[in-house]
Image 1: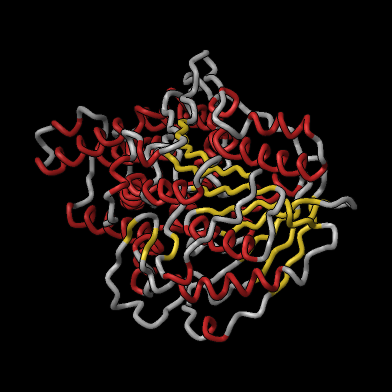
Image 2 (image 1 turned 180 degrees about the vertical axis):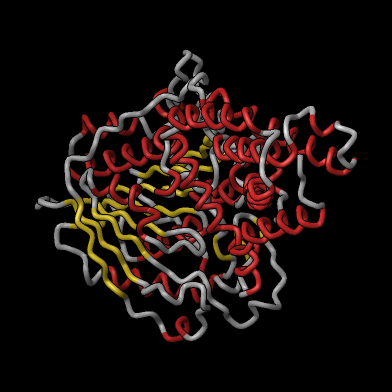
Length: 506
């Protein structure tokens, strides 16, 4: 059997490897951070994972057919076929390396079908290049070739193992949650707000294509008074589409929702010389100052576009990641303006730091009696330290709950609570149970209070406090209970989070 020379094999493999990692290398060269350079591949992995989940049964059939075809002639392949397989092996190896890095940083074992597919491709390439698994021990082949061949075969088996039962439909499936749809269709209007000059002058290139705006989503056909929700996005993620599911869940239930875009890519004086310090849920980032200026400008502009039937006496303020830290700035602004006098709900999802600067501290004395708050983290959040949320919870005081969404890797798809649970791109079963179910009840509670509907108010309230209804996360298809939400009323003094008393960041 002809085998391409070692030099050709190496060159073909490296060419494939370079093809796979060209995009992140290019982004790194052009100034992106490592996280930014890998992010497009993370989104691509997410898209492919959802596709594979939907078509896994058909994919399993295709794999069985391909395996049979390749096994029948794997010892009789032309040099062209081996060359193509070598390039493909390089490409898949590059994708696999990037995937493993993403898995460590973000994915946390939640995606098993994509590496299973990689495993099958690597196996097919190894069989085409080197023949059946017993062939590497043929004394006619060089020792290095034998080692590499058996190595790739073993890697493929390691990748295939965890996902093959899921692909074959043999793993328990998680419970589907049918959240009752809101009764209203939603209309969204976009309003560009005037960016303060001192902020515009120091904006970076990353968000140069963003027209910073206030998005107003309104339930159509509602003439009665409705509550207001203000929502702030995470760092470098000022995209309405990424929070559209969250916004629609609120607005379709009878709320006006304002999505505030603010610039996160700013370069204020001292941005490249300061020494980061994080403590008590705060950080000394100089970026806080211009971002706060932009947020306040957007909030002031918001008051000029609000329909007359929006009642800010019943208010929700919410945010994700960095936006959750800045949601506290919006809270302070709203209380200073006399808003939320009747009802207030605060929802901070996987929150990051709020500002340490004196003039950006939060005065919570105006919080009304009818107040509830959720501060939620994910068990496998690798982006933000839990202690930020713990201290934000302490700031909010009574009637706030600290919630950890668990990761349950029992069946398929695995339920992994990452930093991005609230994003529309990651809206799956776990998001429904651990996040959107709470969002629906938050809206129902505020709307019922707005309408003076005590019966529905009490129903929603029972789902928002520490109760069996809140904690319950359903059952796997074989009857095993999904791990429940974990809830603390005083996390700072709990055994799990007591280290946050002395935590000072990295």
